[in-house]
Every structure is written in C-alpha cells, then in structure tokens.
Image (cartoon, rainbow, N blue to C red; front, side):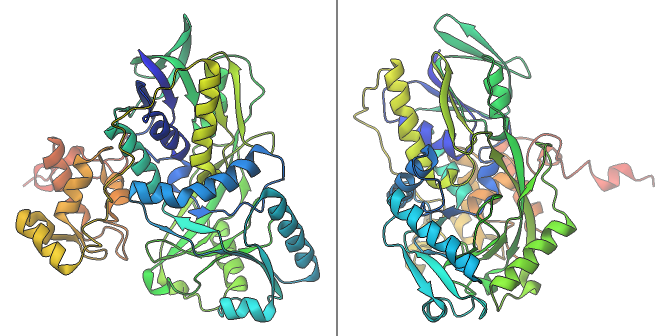
Length: 480
C-alpha cells in the first residue's frame, strides 16, 4: 500500500516524485513505457520559458514564472545541464511590434524580470545572424535551456535514491476505488494500491481521469516536428530565437541546445491520433523555410536527424490541476510551458495533497543531490586518468561521435532509473546521438546491455515492446 501513486513518468511526475520523496512517504511512479521520459518530456523544445506568454492570472502564468526561477537551482542539485542563454521574440512588421509590446506588458504583469524591447540595431548587436529584415525583438534574459529528458531521468533517479519505487511497462487500464484509496490495475493484471493518486499521464490524462469518475477533461495531441543540426552549427545563435506567437503556440524557433547542437522547430498541427509521432515532408519543409527566414547562416547540410513530439493540449486554455474525486488529483493539459513550470507544479500539487489530509513529515536524511550523468565526459584529463586507473572501462570509447566510454554506458544501466534499451542508453549518455546516429556504436551498446541485463543479444530493443533490432543469427537462417 503506497501513500501516493503517480501515474506518468514524465517531467511533471518526476518532479513531483522527487518533491514527495523528501517526506516520510511510500511513493510509486507508474509508467506505461519501458523507460521514463517517453512522452512529451523526450521530444520538446527544451526551453525554460521566462513566463511572458501565458495569460496573466492563470495557473500557467503563475507556475511558469515560479518554475523558471526554481529551475537553475533544481538543475544544479540534479547534476543536469542548464544555461541561462536568454530568449528573443523577433518581429518583422508593425503588427509584430504591437504583439511584442503586448507580450512585454503581459510579462511585466506576470512578474518576469529584466524584460526589454530592442530596436533593430540592438537586436543585431546581440544576434548578428538574425535576419536583417527583423525590426524589433522582445528580450527576456531570464529565459534558459535545459535537457528535458536528462532533467526527467535525474528527478526520477533522485526520487528513487530517496526511496521511491518505479514500475515501468505498467499501463493503467483500470482504477478501482478501495476504501479511502485506489487500486490501479495494469494491462497485464498487475496491481498497485495507494491512498492518494496523482494523474500526470500526459496526452492520456483524460482517459485516466475518466477511469475514476465522469469528467469534462479532454486532451488532444498537438504535433510538433523538429530538425536537429550537428554541433558544427551550434553557434549560429546564442539566444533562443522565436517568431511572434500565434494561437497555435510560441511559433517555430531556432535555439542552441545545452549539448552544443542547433535545434529548429516545432510545427503545430492539431491531431487526434495519440500515437502519431511520424515526421512529414510538409512539416519538416515548414520548419526549414521558417527558420531560414528568421536566421541566416543555418547550414542545412549539418542536419543529423529529425523527430516529432506530441504536446498535451487541454480544453481550458490553462493547466488543468484539480481534484475530481477525493484523494485523486489531475495534472492534465500540461503543455508548454510545462517543462519550465514543473518544479513549481510539484510544489503546488504537494500543497494540494497536504490540504487533502496527507501527512507530510520531512525526512532528516533526504539527499537532493545527484551525481551528473556526464561527470566523466566533463572531467579534466587528470581526473579522467584517475578514473580510468580505477576502472579501465572508462578508457574504452564506444561512441566515437560523442566520445562516450564503456564505463559511462555501464553506469547508465546500473544507475536509477536504469537504462533497459538502446534509446535509454542514448538519453542518459548521448551515445548514438552524434553524426552517425548509432551507425557505429549500436552493436557494441547492444552487447553491453545484453551482458548487464543478463538477457540474449537478440532480445535487446530500441525502445521496449516489439522494437527488436535482431531476429537471429544470419548463419542459422541460411541453408548451406
């Protein structure tokens, strides 16, 4: 019997689990996929938004600004890369300038610090590669970038290190009311009981909410396609560069990443299929056209991959954080700026749980600090040599593009939450994220996973489920 069960292993569920793990509680995270950070938390713009876009007075506006202010310290404690590079919303017309002035006023009302409006000269002094046709920009120095899946993995790992449990491949198919609590039943008939439940199931949050009671929560996916460029293009811009936003979102952006790449996107397409993460020729073409209109100097030949993420769009225009049943809380419709707001959302929901009657007693031994996953990569040569002397696996490079060693890969498989598949290793170490996208290192990583997990080589998957890469040995299938 758990005190709190959190349905969904994304950044909101992860941050909440970490916050709750600082109290004397028994906590469980239920995730339907083979790993955490498998939904919107693995495929988004990675922006810590300053907070000027949300409508004043909304939960979204309040928690965006607070979460943004909390993020730097949170990332530091979790050993996650964070860079306060600032955001620019670029305008190309008088109409755009009016919109930027509205965003400035909205940001001031929301409590965003250091906002200013730049003229063309000031803008191009900050970012020479912004299109010469740009006439003004909103400057938000408190905007930042972070790695969303690294943040999620670290938050859940820190929660687990402090006593929380994680159950993957646990797709909640039914929720039964049992006394004052709930029984969650998975699609393979596993069961978990909890006194309190928090529904942080992303694009499936409406379906989970409906398992408990009738609700008017409706979530639909908004598809966003991205293009990622090699590190050779990582310095085209230093700020996150937006176009003026529309009703469909904050627009297509150009931004550096914390790992030195350049990210372009996303599109914004309303769809109904919650499994449609395919990229399209039209979508990627739109990204490339819009980004090259905004910014000069983008070398599209440096493109190394493209991907698509689904944002959980609710039917209220705001985050849906409410209680539709006693001891049950929904954290639904957490679209952008959900990543930015996630530390504040965790505190907000914790207070809701307290008001519902959950007893919160602080742990004396809670440890908020987590060792960075990239500790070896960023160590000095002398430090690396000392680590290699103790463990020779750190001296064997497996991923040549990113310089990732065998030791780091084995650490990722042994550290909470453990990597169980190829994409899990990728998100934790960056192995397979370089220019060859795993073309060289994938067989070696598969071998390490097979050895560490104690399973056969051909049972290793790309991302769980039926995503096997091998069907057997060639010579066994050939007739001689």
